Image (cartoon, rainbow, N blue to C red; front, side, top):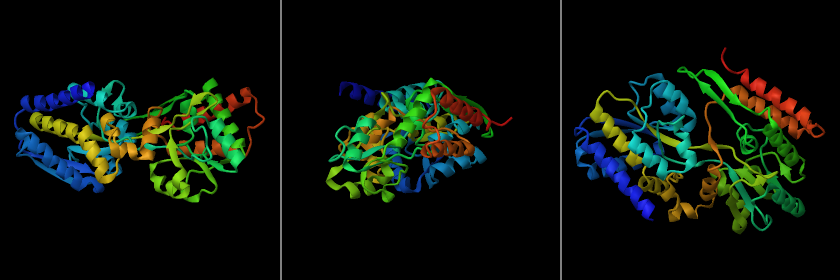
Length: 400
């Protein structure tokens, strides 16, 4: 509690310092947020202005532009774009390259790093530089399970054994490039791409052709061989559900199936390592400004709109899962079984960046081969050749 109060004081001081060190700003700021949060954001802006007299006379226009469209529009015309805008983590590199984001003030970056979960903090950074304010940690996958069947949800081997015995199914979509990273990233592998100012791929960092890559591949082969395994991730299509790797969007469907036996946790371990994967985060970015007073106002407002208090209120209003550590401990969030499981899982995930369309096709082909039992009798050396071919092909998507 003392640490939290100290962080709150730091945030209040940061807001007051920004205000004190800048001229009172009475111009216009444009904000783009998802349509579902427009009215909520307008109300929070008014609360910010009421608490910060130096900004009481500024005009804030809140427009309904979703995360995907906001990034695309900013990349098309930065000057005409919003001053503050919400976007998803996979657009960060392109927005930075296009000059659409100003780096977060050092004092604000310190607050962000101390008050938000590690996954979201990592997602708003390139190298050591922070370029945006985390707003949510609510997109990713974890494990729903039937607690009358699964006795140890922390271990995939135990989950499979329980479900095999009970005649229940374990759903895990291993021919998906999104879910597949649970194994590779969990085993310690990396696969990321870098882009230039135009969004063209210019480099790949990948070490799938390695001992860890083979370990991940062998884990998927073992999972696929279990009679309990079903390749899929849609709760609405599930039958005899014992466990399913899925996300918060299917919480209601899973709860309807499992009833009183509904439960969810982070992904289990397999072959001794913790399954990882992609995490999804929403964030607020601030556009570079020539007017220092306007920039100070934008920074102060963005910090406020992503504070723990506002994140908790946003969850209550529209159900978005907070990245703020204190907001994650609110009664409403903790009572949400799916969000609690996701919060535990995201500490083992990385933010999804830019990936070429061909990557997803390549990953599907790898998973299809596993499901077709193509590699069941392969030696480790042969599996390394499979991973080497995969890595070489993935690198071939980079613009020459």
